[in-house]
Structures are given as C-alpha cells and as structure tokens.
Image 1 (tube, helix red, strand yellow):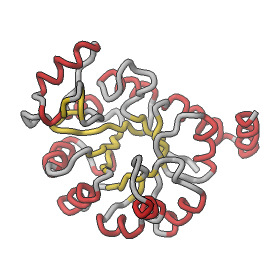
Image 2 (image 1 turned 45 degrees about the vertical axis):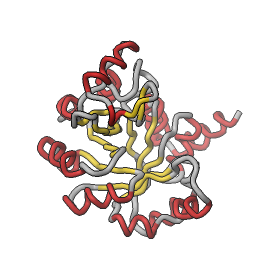
Image 3 (image 1 turned 90 degrees about the vertical axis):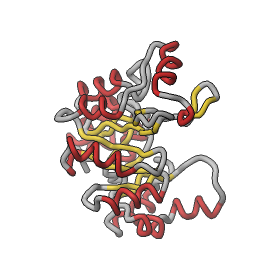
Image 4 (image 1 turned 60 degrees about the vertical axis):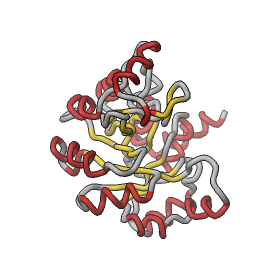
Length: 250
C-alpha cells in the first residue's frame, strides 16, 4: 500500500523542459523515489537523454550531438548526455530507465552498472527484444515491459491487456502499463504472476489516489509533488482515503 513515486522525465511539469538536468534536480529536491528518463543515440554515437525520435522534422539518429544541442539552444535548453544524468543522480535518487531503441543495450548496461547497484535502478522498454537483450546480458537487472502505446490492432491491444506470453518471452520482471489499462482485474492478474505494476503517466490527484487504492507498485507522474502529497495523505488513515476520493469526485 506504499507505491513508489516516479518522476516522469524528471519533474517534467515543474521544469522548463523535460528530460533535462533541471528537471532531474527538481525531482531530487522533492525526494521522489525514482526519476524516469529516456535514452537514444545520436549520429555520432553519443548516448543522450531525450524522448522524441525527431526534432525539426529530422530524426535524432541523423543528427550529431552538437547539432542537436544547437537546435535545442533556440529554446534555451540543452539535451544531457546519459553520463551526465548518471553522475547527477548517483547517491541521490533511483533510476527508471526507458530504452527508446534497441541494438546498444550492452553499452547502456555497462555504463549504469559501473555506477549503480542493482537495487538502485530498473530498465524497461516498449520493445520486447530490448527488454530481453538487457535480461540476457545481465539477468540481475530488474527489467520491465511497457504497455499502452497509441494505435495498434485489436490483437495488439489484447496482448497488452493479457501480456503474460510477452512478459515470459522477454523475461520481464515487471509490467508498466498506461494507467487506464491497469484495471482492478489487470492488476490482480499481474499479482497472481508476481509481476509488479508501475503505471504511467498519472497526474491528477484523484487518479493517483485510485491507483494507490488498487495496490499498484509504482506511479509514474509528471507531478511528483502531487504524487508524494497524495501518497502521504492517504497512508495516514484509511478513513482519509475514502474522504479524499469523495472530495475529488465533487
């Protein structure tokens, strides 16, 4: 009944730009349990922390790191290198690392495990093969499968609502669904298979409260300050939990 609060792309709702050192520093100051961020690779093989696969209609993979930073400088921010984020967060906050691409999982694992203990981070992806690659390279790493990507066929959606075959195939230790996918029935099924559930991305206090009552293991949010406040409030007294949801419903 005490889910971890994970700052999505840093405290992204509180910073000027997501996935920046500024956003991560705010998450650390708030004392979120984890900070979540995305990893991509530039044309000159720099591992960076960046969500989107393109900028200015150009693929991130087609840009050098310097060129990418020159583009983002127009909006007064800089894309951090993975190495910078690892150094900043070391000893201050745990990591929830999303692999946006596959093919260089070993390099990421080597960088992270050089600085962090296994209980200080976890890795996840929407890409089943990336999850499997991380597990196969280092089975001590806690790995997760992301679910709930926009679009997809009915078959794909069924495999997301009933993901056990996929979870087994990629050796995922946990599941990370979009919060609307994480129904009471879904969560109960995952618990039966001993798969922790970390939901994304939950920002409204009422929805965070519902997730807590449904016994999720982690809540990924753009507003870790709200997540921490709701969790602390709801854990004080069971009567307050019910009162809280009634107030939010008005």
